[in-house]
Image 1 (cartoon, helix red, strand yellow):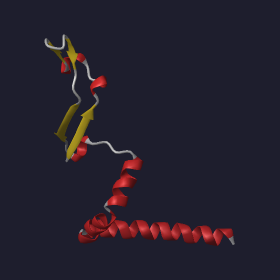
Image 2 (image 1 turned 45 degrees about the horizontal axis):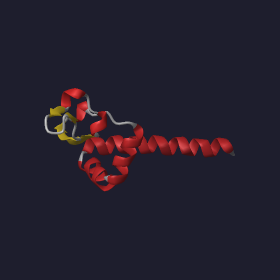
Image 3 (image 1 turned 180 degrees about the vertical axis):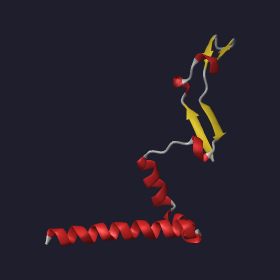
Image 4 (image 1 turned 90 degrees about the horizontal axis):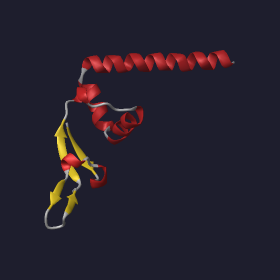
Amino acid sequence: MRIPISIHHSELEEEYCYYDDWEKSVVCADYEARYEYSVDEVELDYADLEDIVNEYFDDIIDIILKDKLLTKLLLKRLHKNISSITDEKISKR
């Protein structure tokens, strides 16, 4: 996974800047790069995951349905959730 990194020049430390003889001052440019990270190195919070699911919902469903183990796990979770919803409705009566 390639992650774009952008740091505004005002946030850079001096080691990323240089002294310009013509301007007679230290010059810092914005830092722009793309780094390669593995999935294990990336930390996502819940909001990030929701954004990913919303953006790639159809692809995620296709991946789950193509894998028998993932499909079985999904059906198991759905059955558990349906059972808990049904139990809640019965207990409210």
